[in-house]
Image (tube, rainbow, N blue to C red; front, side, top):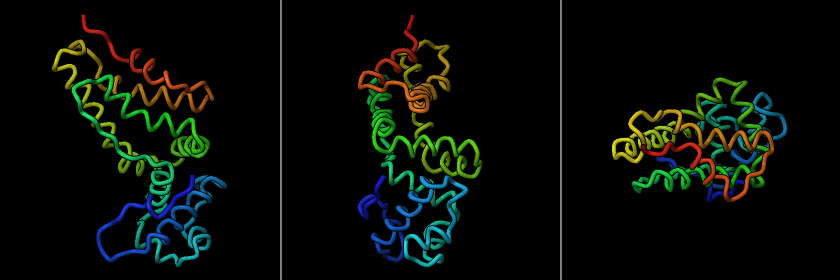
Length: 196
């Protein structure tokens, strides 16, 4: 994953040097890919990025926040939150970027990140707070709306349906199973119960 200055979100406050931001995030990603979460330190990132440690702390209050932001920017994990009234199409649209990343050049680093989240509670908490939480809640909203419209049976398990597509994709990535273009449609068709 290579981060350019265009991938780095602009934050409010004093203007910052986008090249410096990109260097910090790239150094973080590189250290993470080489040594895992425990191998990332503010000192190490500062040395590799060629900046002072205070420069990093002005941007990121914790190592977990820094690593999550580096992975989010490096893997371009942008929020895509459609709500067209077509649950199947919306789920596929939301999951497509994840599928593309999990079968692309970023796959190894993303799988490593998923594994590290299991070992490092602070990393999992920050990722859930800043990246996954909004998507997870949006998918639940989409599923509940489909139930209310009668597109899904009234007794559908909204939480399970919301979690399943991403879980299937991660399962395929972790176990190196085929991930072709048709996979998302097959998963969504399996997960969505048919109205009776």
